[in-house]
Image 1 (cartoon, rainbow over the protein chains, first blue to last red):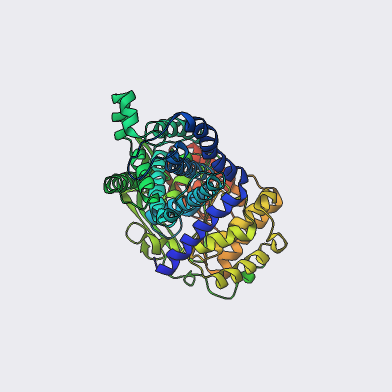
Image 2 (cartoon, chains in turn cyan, brown):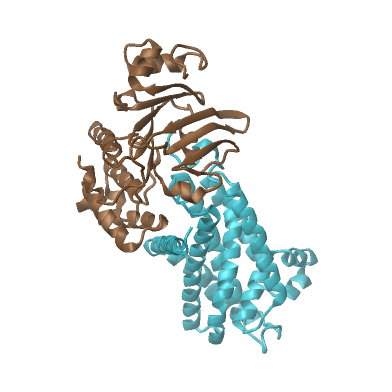
Length: 270
Length: 268
């Protein structure tokens, strides 16, 4: 594989993913509406009742809507990671994944390129969400937006790897849609996305422990600290470790053979 | 049919009479405990069309999945254009074009966008890809559909685009997995004629899986696959003669209804 060939292929995969995203306007709309509902409805209600004391990385008292922004960035990427995997299951069932994997490039490279392309889409969604949140009056630390970019590549890839790992284990599209819901909401709710962990511990020690073992908590905390120009080493290590673990499992487990001889073709055949 | 429009550059195929483009030796594959292919060996010469004839479930698609590197088998070897698939996957696949049984174009992209996407995956530079796409669209008679979304094309037109896509990188070996599935008679005829033209004029080795005997031409090489084993191979007339049948239809019926190891048409 030459570098030029690899670059051309990556550009093509990215271009296809972006084109698909642009063509599916409902997907973009849904990706924005979801976190905005949380921010403008849920957080607005809590804003009056839930004050937050000074906790790192914040240097002053903050309103609840400011607190939930990093969690909602994580939510956008979580949904997108799962959506990306869902489209990979769809591509596998429709056969276009066969076309991709039968090209003269290493399978691992093609799958990573596909994950990166999905992550790029999620980053566009996040910045669009942040722009609307800012326009709606939520304080968004503008200085943190640029440092957020490489971190979102890491967190987006981690969630894509998790999604790809799941898609490598699941044979049918319908099953994957079910698993998505089963996974997304517990991951989101059992994390520090909506409440700081010390608040969770006051309510339930068991829930607190579950939140501590949820990688999504560390994704949110890494996004939060980066937005405020701080580096959370623990969160970074956990997120990077999660990416390596699920990435390796996904690359090992992802094979077009999964699903048996009928995977990727419509009819019976030989 | 004018296959010369494919462009002046040579395909990766060697000249007719040269070493085999595809070599398969002792290939075995199983889905769990169910054996799908059992000790398959074959060789394809450049410039020849080989029909892989077999009933549903014979193992044709599994064989194609192995040759395209989608499935891995530890038993047996596959060599494409002299490169072993297991040890030199990228080089081996670089000489391969494939048309899958199911239609695999992106319906929401235009014809040109689909071809550009695939050209980039194959590593073709932009200008070369543009030229090649224009030539191939002319060859398959779809120049005026270049900007049409694939979703708006008929099944036959989509299949033509898939054939063009498989030829973008001038492959030495072209695999077609039951390419006429769902096509009308006129398109089937075009397809079979076109494939033979490609082999004749560009020296491409073609392996075409089918279960329809009327798609096999008298001058073709033939491999009959049944229950995962090759039960007959050779020139069409030889296979018919060895089986003691009057024609290929009857020979195929005899070969695929008897015990795979016995019979006068059994592979030598």
